[in-house]
Image (cartoon, rainbow, N blue to C red; front, side, top):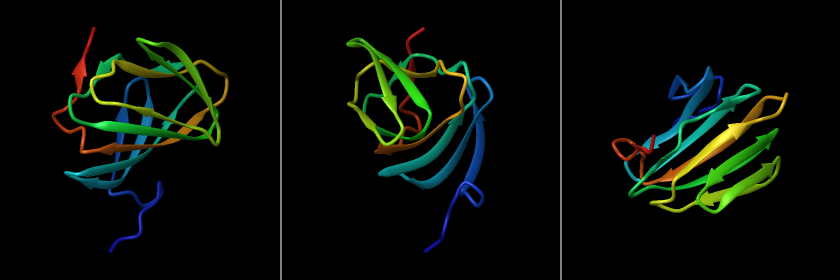
Length: 115
């Protein structure tokens, strides 16, 4: 067993518009990441055929865009995204956004851009 954190992750990576990610669990059946989005950043719209995702906001406010519309999610709240749902997360605020992202199974080779 290995203790992990953002300071000691399995892996650190940069994504999107200068966003950070830290892999905490990286198994074929489960991924857990901590991610950070600076103010006024966004990811591209996409979907996953297999992976179900759960976003839990640690600090800041996330805006999710889906076919159902825009959903604001604040610190201490979470949002589940089912497989096949087109989505993207945005940080429209002046504050940093920090969240956990759990995916089951892994999103490796299961991310499809829509634009």
